[in-house]
Length: 301
Ligand SMILES: [Zn+2]
Image (cartoon, rainbow, N blue to C red; front, top):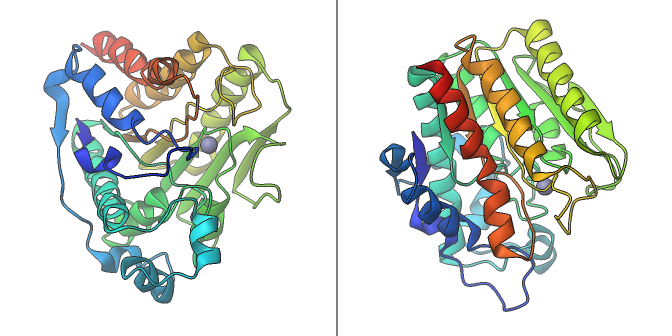
């Protein structure tokens, strides 16, 4: 199933704000007109806040929920605070959790949001407030639904917050493939890191994804993969420094989906970053995930 909420794009941002908040609604509308429309699931339930506290400091959680963050913290987070921001954040997290539960039952699921991998234990950063995959991974293990989770992060930016939030849990494996020159300037240490040079294009990128995923699965034998399908690896992304083509994005998503689906390893996907100013091209780039999904689902039948 593909989880969506109208709250994802329901955020009033200043006119020149850098985050393309409409991309969620645009992608939803594209999917509504596609072969995948019957798999869309609209869900607006907020997450139980106690689950966020498994990962994030209670003081930070409470300050965000009540609008009491200081101006420096709000600036670092990247979004002006509003009740709508709280609403979309809590719904995104619950849908990330639901998509993982759905994947455990039905092999795969996608949340049309998420990938908020810069969120740190005590602060938001880089358009990320609470770290959806870290929260979900801790919750799955806390509930004893799985023994081991692999967070496989292919966004162009390193999953630094995820690495920090999961470093003390040996049952959560973090793997990040990213551009070494991109934000964040000082990198954290994931269990597996694959920094790539500026300008990396399809061949090296796709070989790295293949090898990294095979290695992570072979070494750690996860029970579920949480996959950040960031579209900011695109050659056209103004905030990413890699040069992966549109076809390369589709192939990457296909490699990850195929590796999991063919061995019945459950996979829950988050949309991740994607910042192209050209909204149509950004939508087309994120939509490669669903082209890859269709390819793989057709092959499974
Ligand atoms: Zn990113």
